Length: 99
Image (cartoon, rainbow, N blue to C red; front, top):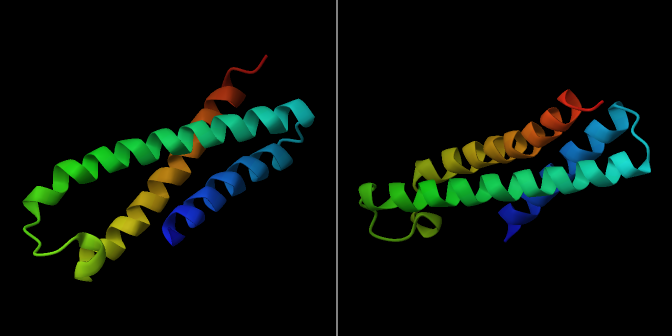
């Protein structure tokens, strides 16, 4: 649950920073928030599907959360990077095609 809170804060941080640094109006802030949240959620879903495909090949006795396997910490960092990219790519696309 704590990881999810961090990921939500990361997505909101990316959206707010991009809207503030681009000096968007209020509607731009709202659009940035929605695009960032949708992109972050899509990326979390894709990473979740990849993890489901990967876990049977790890041959762990318990779940990854309880195993204290070093891979757990690497995956948390990789997921955080993927969420940042997932929330930034829609914002980049919106800014690229803005008229």
